[in-house]
Structure formats: structure tokens, C-alpha cells
Picture: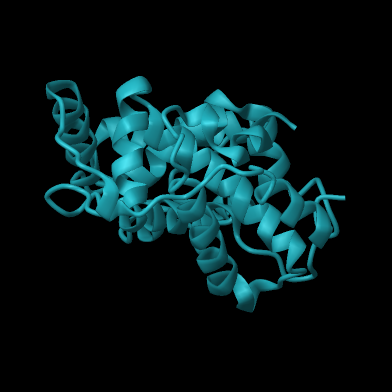
Length: 235
């Protein structure tokens, strides 16, 4: 069962003798490709969600259609959004905490990994709590957590997770979005392992951040597929 504590610990500690290294041991200069991709990602992070922009409105509609293809959306401001886990009738209110990238992350997850996306959104696996975390709002929080963990608001990363992420970004331009999907799976697995309820969401998110930080500190990490938790997207 997904929520089993032994299973959870075994999965994420199952990297065997793969070692973590200290950032002090890393001499790191960005290549031109890394500079370019990092700058492009940072530009994405600086775009606020604007509910008056047609392209942002279209992305929000696309998210609904990817999530509920058989249900017509009555409007961009609608009580239907609560079915996805938004706090109110207008998702724009929740996007203010992280910007347009948090919508892009959710849409990427829905389009690229539709089966895991729906499994998490509909809470289809594991022993669920009576008061579950709101899926969409959790997604916005995960976007924000990743930005902080990877130091994407600073000039260049100084921590090992941030440095290793740049290496991964070299191989995969969409590494941030894929890492988001992995982090969402990790958070849900952590939620089940802790048998958490709504009021413990911050605690679960912090535990997820710490686990992701450990995985991003592995010395042999060069590719997104090298993360032990990557397999969660394909279970």
C-alpha cells in the first residue's frame, strides 16, 4: 500500500550506497547553455498570473479540460474549480502566491503524466484522510517550495541541490516541470506514509522538501532519471 511507512522509507532510501556530497567540494561554472536555460527559467518565474490576459485564460481552460475532459466548464470564475482543490471560485486568487509558472506546472503534469495526475487529483490510491489536502492549492505550494529549494530567486545557486539541478537542466530543458511532477508524487506518498490530515500539510511539505534535497545531493546525479523518486511517475 502506498501509505505504508516501511514502503515509503524503503523507496526513498533505496539508493543503496549512493553518496551525498557537500557543496563546498563543488567547483561550478555555468556553461553558455546552462546560463541560457537558467535565464529562460527565471524569466518564467517572474511572470505573474494575469486573469485579463487571453493566453493565461486559455491555459486555465486547458487545465480544466485536461483534468475533466467530459465536463464542460461554465466559466473561469465558477464553483466547479473547487472540485480540483482551489480555495474559491476563482483560481486567480491562489496563483498570486507563485505566479503563472504554478499554472504551467499543473498543466505540464496533466498533459505529460495524465494517469499519475488524475490519480493524485482524485485521491485514488492509498488510505485517504477524512480531511484531504486540496490538490490544486497543494500544487501551487509545491511550485513555490521548488523555487526556494533550488535558489532560483538568487543570482546563481550555492547549495548542492541547486547546483545539481543546473546539471540536470543541461540534459532536460523541462527539468523544472518534471521535478515538479516528481515532488508532487513524493508529497502524496509522504502524506499517506504519515497518515496526515489537512492541518499537517505544512509538515508534510517540509518533509518532502527535505527528502528531495537529499536526492538532489547525490554525487552521481546528472539526469532527471537518476533521482530515486523518478520511478514514482511510472508505478
